[in-house]
Length: 256
Image (spheres, rainbow, N blue to C red):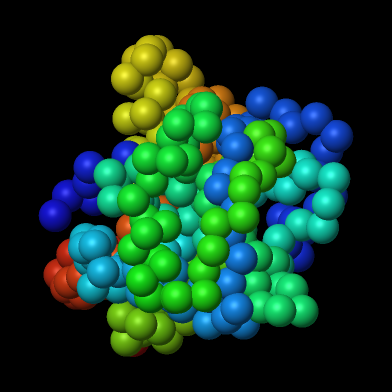
């Protein structure tokens, strides 16, 4: 499968600005649910639902991932968030809150208007796995702002270890350059679809940028693509671990 297929605390570590900047894509309203399951069990139930209809592009690429976001609502931010694709292969942002009776959650699909909430097939599938799940209304638009996905502090180390190499400084540097290049290729593809010259300027401006800075730069330059890059770190990880061939980059440049 090609690198980029057809797939189109609880704050991010800093307080959300009063008004989301251009690097933040505000989502429309969400559908609200209540469950008698504890938070972790509710998340497992949703993940199992997504895995029942989704197909992993790569063995090491999960179907449910950690999205980048800022919480813009007036109430308590969610305890956990997830991103995934629905049965129509469109991005959905999921937010979860602990309650004394279990869990409350919200699903925010792409698009605008209330009709899109009623068209979602996933809630019915989810309710079959969790009989306690009930729809309890909606969540207002504009309370979730999507940002570039955040690379975990151990993102590179986890890939190196999973591939059977030691996470030495040299190996991590090799992998970072390879991942950064893959992110930059994808960013240039997105921007180039609108203006080739802009893609070239972006590549020049991020020639020495880190992998995270490339993602941040893409989200800032073209916020509309932010939903479509949420799974990119997991996709790259899955691709790299699909076949660890020491005759190919980046593995041929590493030492065990």
